[in-house]
Length: 399
Image (cartoon, rainbow, N blue to C red; front, side):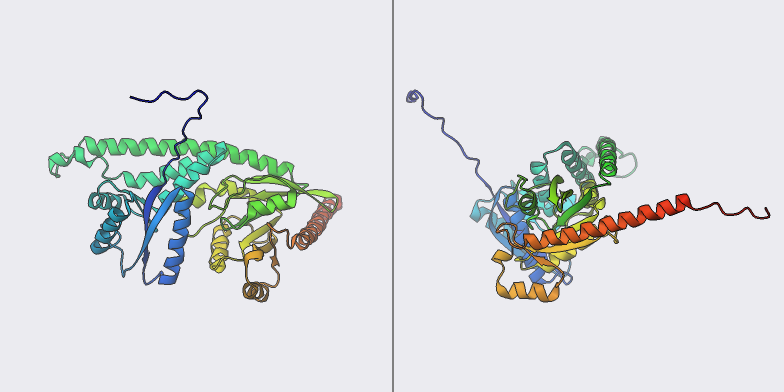
């Protein structure tokens, strides 16, 4: 018999238990073990951001991926035993899995959820999407991810025909129906995103007379913290990957006038191409900027890789003539050897700490210098346009 509840007693809170998971990474002749190890560590941070608890990680060296299960049969059995020992119900692979590989792995590990890096990133994006725009972009990415993985989902309906002529059964029909529905939905979402992009273009045109700075960089480099430090704003900040997905625009009063700072979604290694394409509208804020501020985590052991990822992502988005400033953030936790290394290899970059308010005056001075150049460029362009407008008509030939 249950005891009667005491009057005014607080309800018991039940915290959601973290999903326990195991990570699997692969080193190949093209991906050296040290790099595969760093990528696996980053996958661990992604899993934690998604709310999972990582019990252990596996890193296998292979010459070629297994078509059936990505990793070898022996490693599959090893992972299966580890899942049982750790009471984990999820395994996350650092490389993309095909639909057939997911099914094969789930058959070999019954009751286990199988995810890959892209699926995990999409889950994080879905949880962190706040605005209508980011939600639309996430849905497009999820549908594009789902499309090739539909294959075989309905084959159980037509296996009875044993293949051959006349076997275009209900399974294939249903599969094609699903694909058509997904393609149609993607088209609808992209049209909505185009309207949002058009509205952003109009806003950019209205801001033509205001100096704009686009803040870009690897995820968790401290872009939002820097925006808060410079503008006194309250942009959401958390020590997690992809804490913010939406571009955030704030005003900074500088040298007697306002400039606009726009913080964008962070980049990450092995970000699937369709995700980059989907989030180009968010990055479009940077594409319209008069100056790009690249924020790098100066304390990260693999900061050079972060620089390369940022460069490759922006290559097709940002005009190569747009001025760029680079800052190495989090220098308060970098040792003296690292600070010296950054100074020697990147003498034009500014070392800062947005958290401890270090280097902010030097950064503001760099903004002022870019602002002066922007005014000079605009003045020269206006002068040129005026000269063309006031130029005398050329004499008529044969007049």
